[in-house]
Length: 355
Ligand code: SAH
Image (cartoon, rainbow, N blue to C red; front, side):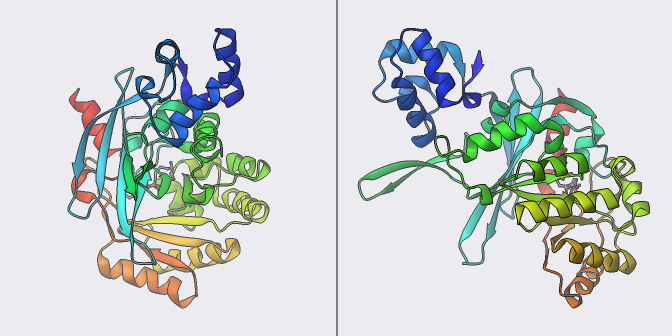
């Protein structure tokens, strides 16, 4: 069966015409799916039953079934999806107040089953790499989050989140083509028309792929998981640093920022006595200055079976104050969802161990 979200309007038109349907029906179907957010062909408006049946029998919409969720007190909710081959992936919904005081929801999506990057602190890495998700499977993680809004006598179906971060299981840039297809489907004006600035992709630092993003003028936001300000510290926890040392990551990030004209975010998880020294903080300041980057300091979520611990609160504050004094734009995130295995890959890992 063909994956519906991977089709362009022209491709759908061709398929319909070849099968004896009118060309303009493709546009009606696109409107039903992308504008009205109807993912069951039997509910398409103004489409006759023969065409509904054709769409039902030939295209797949939902490629990942929502099979469970867990909530934490801080409003983080984690969702477990079962794929058709029996593998599991997870998505997370985070709620946080924005600058205007309103609560904003962010959906965190996965791009692979497992991960090949091998970061030593990460639950996704523990099960190794299984496979890339298809673009349809990436998008399917957003489908349960459609809600109906009524203003006056106008009914509208909308995604119930304002932002997307591609920071779940897997290394997005190692699944480049499917990632691009999924993001373009979200962003395209004849598809979901979800703003590019509301989507952030996070990478462990695949410098060759970051350069490619610059080449294609990637319109989405980019975050780089730094987690160490020297090769020595970074290699200890991120083996990918041997292939792409800091210098290469920084050079590719510079190229991205110059070409795409957008501020990069550097993610830095604070792990007790591993990367939380004042020396690392000062060196991180230099990197952030070179790149004009925003720094996101994240308390580490400990993972069962791994030795790493979160830096304590006073250490986190002291680390942050070095950035503050140097005038670096940064956020010191509160830990979120640690009670629900919300660290990257933890829930899906548990589930696959149980099965
Ligand atoms: N592979 C991509 C995206 C997935 S991980 C990347 O490396 O950026 C998303 C973020 O969560 C990364 O910054 C990652 O380093 C971080 N992370 C992984 N495990 C974590 C944990 N146990 N606690 C806190 N952050 C974690």
